[in-house]
Every structure is written in C-alpha cells, then in structure tokens.
Length: 113
Length: 118
Image (cartoon, rainbow over all chains, first blue to last red; front, side):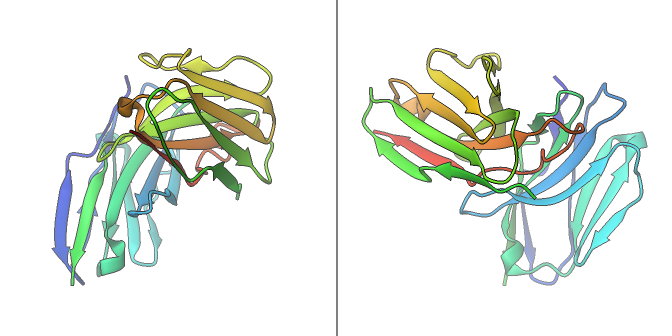
C-alpha cells in the first residue's frame, strides 16, 4: 500500500506560535495529488489545499503555507501565528490514478490561549 | 465546488437492525462515489467505490453483504449497514468522483453520518 505518514499524533502550541505539521507519502504514480484537510470536532472535513505532483512551488494562503518537497516525498503544512480556532485534527492525503484518497493518521493540533 | 449532502447526519439504532445512509451530490453528476469510514480517534479509510449503474467494489476486509451500496443515479448513492452491531459504530463519509480528470472534485466530501449501534 502506498502510505501517507503523519508522525505527529498530537501537537500543542500556545496562541501566536508557528506550528508545522509533517506529512510524508509513498507513491508509485508519476502523476498524483496531495491534499490537506482540517477536521474540527463537528467531523465535517474542510478542504485546505490540493497540489499536483508536477507543481513543487510552495503556496501561501493567509496564515497557511505548504512546502512540497518531491525529493523527500514530503508535503508539510505550516500555520503561522496560530489561533485557538485552528485547533482541530489535520489530515494529509494523496490520490493517484485510482482517484480515491489515502489519508494519513492525522495530527491533533491544540492551540492554547 | 460540489455540494454534497448526507442523510441522516446521525443515527442511533439497536443491534441487529439495518440503517440506510443517503449521499446526494446536489450540483454535480457523480459517476463514482467513494465511501469512507472513520472510527473514533482514527483516520478515514476507504470502504468501497460505487459506480453509477454497476456493482460497487469493496476494499479488502469490508464485507460486501453487510455494507450494501446502491448507486442508481448520478446524484444519489446509498450505503445500507445490514444487521448492524456495536463494532459498526463509526462516522461514514461519502465523496463524489466525476468523469473528469484525475482529481476532479475529489476534494469534496459529504458532512458525514455518525452511526451509533447500541
């Protein structure tokens, strides 16, 4: 199986700190897509980003930024100046030619006031 | 983006009963529907993939006779948990896939259905 690994099970930070969530993936596909989702306590998945395998350009969206390193098969997610509302479980996922998503185990982020 | 609804949003049932979960793709023709399951404190795992008008394909370890999937139209797919038991208690989420490119609309998910079997 082509796994997605999120080694950090839980992270706690104090508000306004920066935090990076790690994601390492395995793939045999030439073309693939990487995703990040946020899952608040309500359970509904909130889409954050999709990146295709040919685009290694880093992306910034407000306080969120993503670092895609194909050489190390990593797709890390950084939240700058974290806020209490950022507290949630964050999932990294990939999809290949088969189109369904393979999820990492998730990272529980707690931002303390 | 695609709007996906699920009904019910939560259900509590007695052991041995059957529960039907509906997933509707409101503004998108879903030729494929992915069904995921999430146990408490765990990740989402793909259970099965349904294709409109044909039989679903199930992931290893998922009993096809227990989790009946019907995908009769491009806007509706249903998952029926037959003879539910407490170990089936989980969060069930659908995700429509289209006939477009590899990642077309893959990022959209339904709001989920929380099933609790007593």
